[in-house]
Image 1 (cartoon, rainbow, N blue to C red):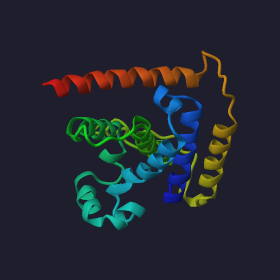
Image 2: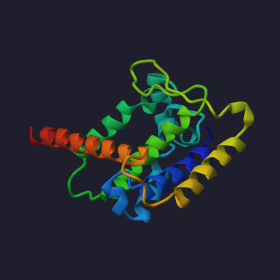
Image 3: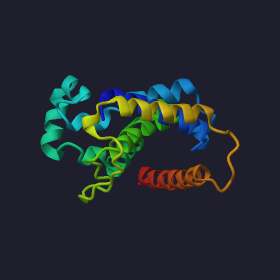
Length: 196
């Protein structure tokens, strides 16, 4: 997927996540925290590719990461998200205030990139270091980025116009409760580590 596609997809995912109330923080969050935060991190997984939009601008960082991990390796995995969040919570001083909705927007932007790359034939190693590639190849590179734009705009339109009152048994409500449970478990893990 192109940088433009990732930017559009992250905006659509941010609007969808807020409107679907995937977490209580996103439900109550400020649009001006969530959307810019998602945009800020949506290109970050491609730091492992020196010719990517971000890799060209940060070549001093991109080239060593590319040599260590290769493209669509560690940076395109759930382990990278977990490692980044753990480092953030354990190493960033408490005086550096990042609103919770902005932090969740950053995670959302990063995850939107991984999800978008899952839509390509190459897929992503979601469970890295396992080499299994997860993919739902509906975006073929030879078709250009027109299909990307259509998909992103369709997701954005759905996110904006989706019904606000979803039934309790809907997949969105189920995923929201699963995300809340994971977030609670992660917070417990971090607090135990911080106390040690």
